[in-house]
Image (cartoon, rainbow, N blue to C red):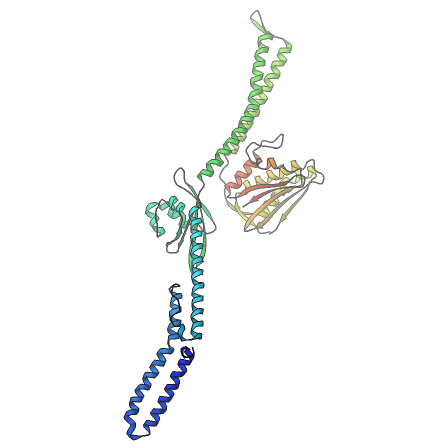
Length: 448
């Protein structure tokens, strides 16, 4: 109804105020009505106060709406004064729609938080975040397990429980990783990253126990090594054992006692000499194999210094120049950036490159228009050195085995060159890997 409309009721009050003002003016012009004018003035003041109270409902409503948002009170509604007319009804509906949108957004946010928290709690990796003051923002069950706590509010509480782990967590730099050795079944790799949340710096740390995986990899490595050792040793021991039996038969059948001397037939003497030569040859081969194993397991610790890749590659090219010329292979060197440097043991890395270039030369012996490229690159903030050849390549089955100690695809290979090269790169906190497309190209990459 029009009488319930907010605008009508405001207009009515203004009209009444105007009427009272006119009446006061009229009364003041009559000397005998001054007292009545004063009383009428009080009525005017009451009307002004009522108009202020009535119109201030909008401000109170807006204040209540903003406070509902401020204090996340999305349960309250705005329906009590719809009787004030269509404009207030629309305002109430708009307020209610906004509050409902906030309520849904908060509900979705809580659902997403619960989902994320459930995922974080279920992953096998320990996850921990804390601010500059050490206040823990997030921690999952595995992080508590690794830290040996049931609950923790501030990371400094860890000092009394495990000061070494506390120092490791605080010392790890964003984007870096460190190893922490705990008990016999705990070897943690700790990684960190930093982010800004609401103007504060938060450090997110992950703790992953690699002991089980390391033990499994170690077991696989030992099994592979044992297979190779068994194969090489049996290749030497079997013919030696067989020849020993043969030589015993020769001595038994061809060796005769004449007076106080023993005589051996010429044919038996030749067989005996040949057998002993074979035993000697196989024994030397076995000793050579053992020496190679000893070389593999006794590498010296690298002496790090700043190495300019341009100088290193030029040096390798000069050392291999004669051998490359003899092989009639096109050899090129490429440097993406002339000023690239790495922290490394120059002699060790030089030996790795020489070994890879030699392998490439041997691989390209039967290749028409053979070519080898030695290249340095800078990719994703990492320095790469690549040795590429267009030889026959490496078949897929052998790609995973070329770095296994004593495994070789060459008849005369010892099988330790690539293993030593990878071990050297690991000692430099780098890696050595290979990609090969048979009869197209093979690329060995040193990644620093």
